[in-house]
Structures are given as C-alpha cells and as structure tokens.
Image 1 (spheres, rainbow, N blue to C red):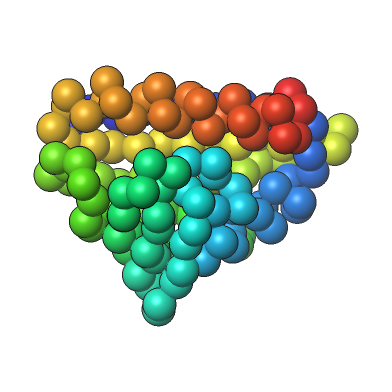
Image 2 (cartoon, rainbow, N blue to C red):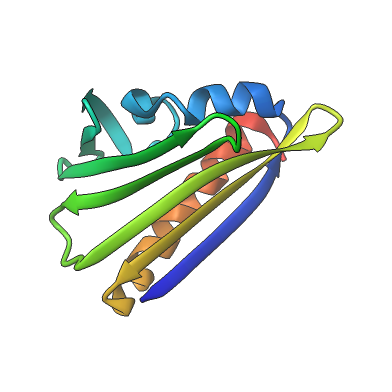
Length: 130
C-alpha cells in the first residue's frame, strides 16, 4: 500500500480550521474537488467536480486530537483500499498546520491522487494563506 503524506502551515487559527475540517457532512465547503456532500450516520456521499460520485465511511472525528479519519468505500476509480486522515495542529501565532495522509492500494493510484491532493492543499493555501 502506498502513502501520500502532505502538510502545510496556514494563516488561520487551529480552532477555525478545525471547525471546517470536523464538519464532515460539509466537506464541499473545505475541498474544491467536492461540489456537494451529505452525511447519513457515518456514511458520506460526495459529488465531485467532474460529476463522479464517492461514498465514504467516516471512521472517526476526534476533537481531542483534531483529527478526522475516513475511507472511500465506493468510487469510479479502481481503488482496492483507501484510508485517509486530516489533522489540524496549532502552529502558534494564529497559524495552524494541516496534515493530510492517505494510504491507497493499488500503489499506482498515487499517481492520480497526489496531484489532486496537492491541488487541494494549494487551494487551502490560497484561501487561508501560508
């Protein structure tokens, strides 16, 4: 299984960023690649900008560690296994660090997911500054 590990420091408080990240039913407000999302229990349904549909299971929303973990369970992509987490850390001075880690199988999926995730990190940097 391959891992993508991305991190960036943003000019936004950890409290404000965590508020956006932990709102798992509204991931479309955090990530541009998702245009709409809904939550039914622990199952999140997402529509992507290209019209594709994802189904994800929310594994945990951990306020103490400011970490969300989720897994894609159905998608238009040939993913065998997917597990991802987003974590927020206080970087001091009103800044925060955003960590996004994804494990995916088959390993070749990294070639498509990494640029997508890097694009989302760039849009967060544009939105919150870095």
